[in-house]
Amino acid sequence: MRQFKAKAHRDLPPTTLWGYNGSWPGPTIEAQSGQALNVNWVSKLPDVHLLPIDHSIHGADASLPSVRNVAHLHGACVLPDDDGYPEAWFTANGEHGPKFNPRPSHYPNCQPSTTLWYHDHCLGITRLNVYAGLAGFYLIRDETEAALNLPQGEFEIPLMLQDRLFHHDGSLYYPRVVNGPKEHSIWIQELFGDMNCVNGKVTPFLEVEPRRYRFRILNASNSRFYHLRLFNSDATGKLEDDSFDAPAFHQIGTDGGLLPAPVELHYLLIAPAERFDVVLDFSECGGKSFSLINDAPAPYTMGGQYLAEDVMLFKVSRPLSGKDTSSVPITLAPFVPIEPTFGMRERMLLVSEKERQSDGYVITGLLGNAHWHEPITEDPKVGSTEIWSFVNITSDVHPLHVHLVQFQILNRQAFDVPTYQQTGKIVFTGRPMAPESNERPARKDTIKSYPGYVTRVIQRFDLPAGATITPGQELLYVWHCHILEHEDNEMMRPYKVIT
Image 1 (cartoon, rainbow, N blue to C red):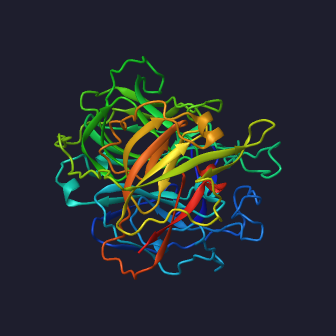
Image 2: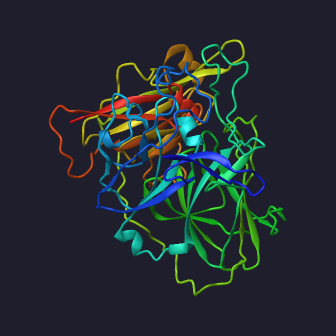
Image 3: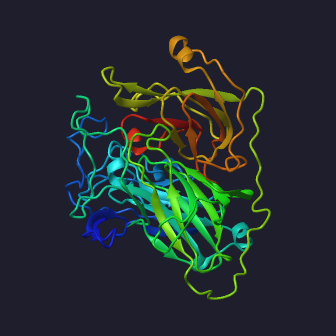
C-alpha cells in the first residue's frame, strides 16, 4: 500500500491517492480454484491520513494511529486470521490492533470460478481508506469456466465503478457535515460523488471491436447504487435516442460465480459490493457508440442527492482483429440449491437506524439492535445451515454482506413497519416475493435489503476445505451493511462460527 499521484481525467491535475502496488484500482489478482495463494499485505503509507477522520466514531479513537489498514478479500471462504477482521489492522511503523495476523494472508481458493475483490476493512475508517483508492479485483478461475468458450484475454475486462468528488487542484474531496449532530462532527450519512470513475478514470471511453466482450462489473462505491442501461449515442457520448436498440446485458455470473444459465437484461441494478459478470455483443454494431448511463436515485431509492448519470462510453471503432469464436452457451455451470427444511434455524435480524428527533438526521445504524462492541448473538455451528431474515425498518436500501459464506436468496416479504415499531411483532402485508431473475438460483454474498421488507437468505457455514480445527473453537467473522459510511458507524456486527 503506497501513496502516489495519478491523473483521473485529462482536464484534472494529478490526484494524490493510496493504492495497492501504487495503482488505483490495485492489481487484478488471478487465482486457480483449488490452488492456494498467500498474499503479504505491507503498508508503505505515510503517517497522516489523506482525509478527515471523525474520532467520535467507535473504533476511530484519536488515540489510535490515523493511518492503519487491513485487507479483506470480499466473498472468499477463509479462516478468521486471513479474513481481514476490522480489528486486525497494522501500520507502516509496526503498530497493530488486537486481532492482528503477522503472517501473510492465506487464501485457499476452494471456490468455483468467480469475481471477488479485495479492499481495506479497518474499523471506523474503511470508508476513507477505500475512498483513497484501496481496492482491487481478485478472480478465481476453474475448468468449468475454461470449457465455456466465453470471451477471454483482451476481450475480458473488469470494470470497477466508483463515484468521487475532486477539488479543482485534482485532490480528492470528502465532504464534512458543517452542522451535524454533536456525536459526529465530521461523519456524513452517505457519500455521493458528482463524477463516476471506471477503473480509476472519470467517465472514460473504451474503443471495442465488433465482437463479444465479457465485462466483470463491480460496484466499489462507498454508497451509490447504479441502475445501468446502454443508450445509443454519438462518438462524444451525446444520447441519440432512448430506444432499446442497443446490446442487451447477458448476465452470466454474480457475486459467487457463474449462473446456471445466462439471463438477458436491459437494466442492471447493482448495489455497493455486488458483482455482475456480463457479456455484451457488439458484433452487429460496427461504427456505433453506446453510453452507459446510471439513473439510480441517491440515496437509493429516496433520492435528493446528486445523480451522477454518465458512467462510460463504448465506441465500436476498432477493426476486427480476428474471427470471434466466443459464445454464450445456453447452460453455464451446475448449481445445487440449498432448500429450507422443517426445523431449520431462522434468525430474525433487525436492520434499523437511530435518527435525531429535531430533523431526522441519521446518527447511527444498527444490525440486530446491537452495537459493534456488544456481546455476539449470532453463533452458527460449522457445517450448519441457517436462514437469516433481515427485517428492514429503515427508509434505506441496505446492501448486507456476510463474511465467509456464499448465501442463496429465498424471498422478500412486505410487513407493516409501524406495527413492528409499536409492538415488536411482524405482521406481513403481502405474499413472499420471488428473488429477481439474476438472484436465484445464484450464489451471493451481498444482498439488497429493501425498506419495509423481510429479506430471507439461506447459507451453510462451511470452512475452507482441509481446515484444521479443534472442538469448541469460536471462529470470529463479521456481517455488515456495505454502504461504507454505515459500516463505519456501528452498522457492522461480529458473529462466531462454533466448531
